[in-house]
Image 1: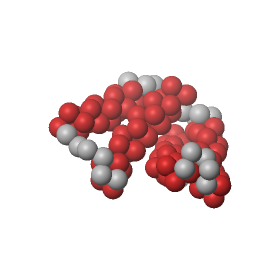
Image 2: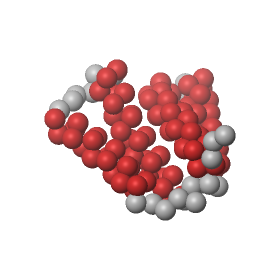
Image 3: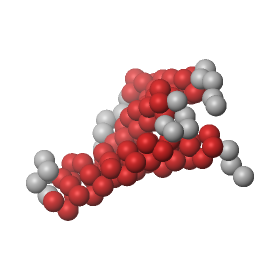
Image 4: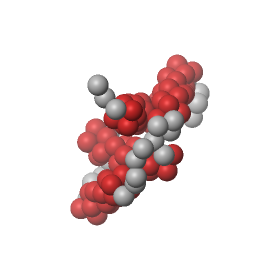
Amino acid sequence: MWSCAVSAYVLLAVAIGVEVVGTVLMPKTDGFRNPGWVVLVLGCYGFAFFLMSRVVATLPVYVAYAVWAGMGTALVAVVGIAFQGAPSSAVRIVGLALIVMGVVLVNWASPHQ
């Protein structure tokens, strides 16, 4: 059986994935003028926040938010580079690696329940 912390990290990963989907789809809303896409994007964000509310019941909010913000930012950037033609450079790749390393360090240095 999984511990509460492992379950919280699974929920956190799902929350990040759903938030990344919502963020990547945001341009489809056309400035919130396309109602179908607006509903989908808001649904993604709503579901992601619901999951985060469950996560912070187990993990410290500073850990959960650091992982959420760091990994979400890195994943949106990776999706942009890989699938949307965003420019890539060595500096950007190093920056993304530093974000991920920062998330790892925050988790590593955090006492868990």
